[in-house]
Image (cartoon, rainbow over all chains, first blue to last red; front, top):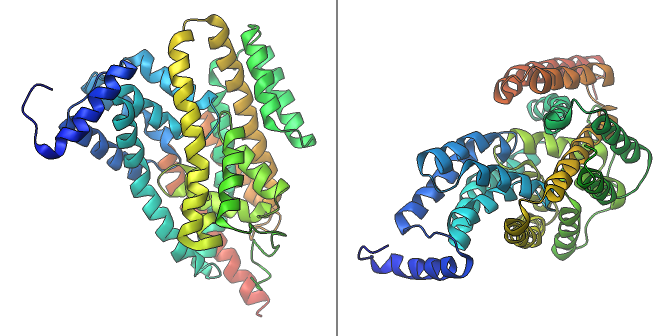
Length: 202
Length: 202
């Protein structure tokens, strides 16, 4: 960041370096930030079935191509966002934060959200006014069963690291039973999972 | 909504009073969503608030899943838009994202201090197993939403299981399955709707 900056980039750079000093994160220059934003804009339109499906490409861009994160940092970012409350899309915010603090987080989150949200908004209006048309009905009713199947496969893939453990199957079974038979908040099950995991049983 | 073959013939029994209420409910459900918000969204919007029936939720999710971008953000956006236009979409999305974003960033900073602890790694693993169970049970609950499916529940369930087997067990690329099997299911539904319309014209 020693090259002379254009005035429009100056404030962003000042802001960045201040945050970098406070949080101990390495700052990027404005061009790199724009590149980061642009890459996530592109990924947004490719993220069919959830942003997590584009994680391999994020890894290629952030870790292999630019070296902004290590492999371990990348995996931990995703694990952490899944463990914390909130939508899984927040792993994108954690990645951006780990690359370049607040500016990085804004670049990745705005990039991943703006194109897909604009499209969803337009689609919602278009479909909303045509909900009873045969084509639209066939579209939504045709995809409904696949949606259920995709949820089951996501569960299957999430359980992949511990599928060989009997105790993990037991925990999975308890979770299913409680969710299908009671009105208990899933938060308690997550707490149970954390306890069982911390005790080293799964 | 007068069409008897409509998958959403059952109407939801309640609706949000204002964008502020949308914001509050989406914040509440996001903050309970450890390892993914979808199971909580189903519980809060369908079971607790009664804003959507199972079939309506499934329809929103089906569209949200096939559009690019994070599924739950798409669902929030489309539902918010349906209630209060762009103000509702903004309220639901920011409720979903704002507070959890603060929490996940705080967790990131904390995690950097405790990453090496085996207790923390174990707890993350245990929470992952429960998260898998939550997603699977959400899928199981939404099977109830197939009751009025134009293909009938058994056939629709067959499509769901086939999707789970192809994507989850055989690890076929999701885009290919959604395009291939999805188009087949849509054509099948369109055929069934035309057949029903010919049998019982209204």
